[in-house]
Image (cartoon, rainbow, N blue to C red; front, side, top):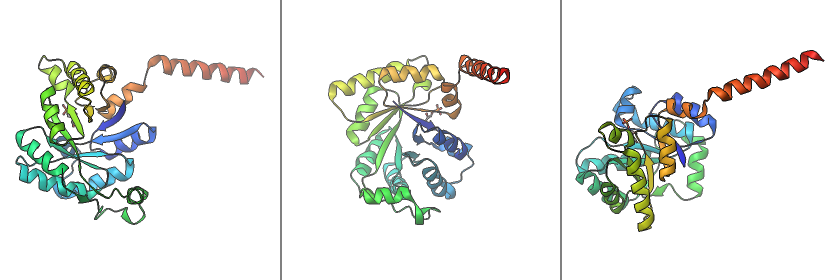
Length: 248
Ligand code: E4P
């Protein structure tokens, strides 16, 4: 399973990228607001995230109608070859997914502060992947049927919101398991991004349930690696080592 960060904070992405385990970033309008990013600053901010992490970055539209979503999605997709357009799983969202997934855009990285010497851009250019069909992440998924419709409309990623289902007395992990099993039976391509995870137990559970990706807050990522017995064990090893050196 791949680990994604669910954030728009540059420092969190920088820190997680340095661990060597970060495979993607998902943002949403709430994350953008929390990071203090205004609409006019969005392109620069996403390009900075791309530069820091060199991984796919989901960017969510705010339009509610298909025409508006397509216009925003086409714009986002030009910002960087790493941009994945995030669309809500509504009727208008499905229409936009169908149109966007069949369109072609040139990821020109226009206005990016790093474009002149960017190894990421050079790599995509070499692979002839700067002109491409936008990839789509279908968000706000709460049922298997919504996910199947999004994939049928052209989404590459589907994002079930685990913790939000738990919060209303349903079982978010069971949805991930059901969805993973359905995709296997149908031999349906598409990746499940388990989202709205609330704690480390969710992360293990969605991995067992068959999620391809888990996207989480930076605080959860740090909780995954920390254990008091690891800390205490390391300290004891070092104390023994230091003592042995002093005894010589
Ligand atoms: C996923 O892509 C979403 O950004 C995210 O997980 C939203 O979840 P939350 O706002 O309930 O934490």
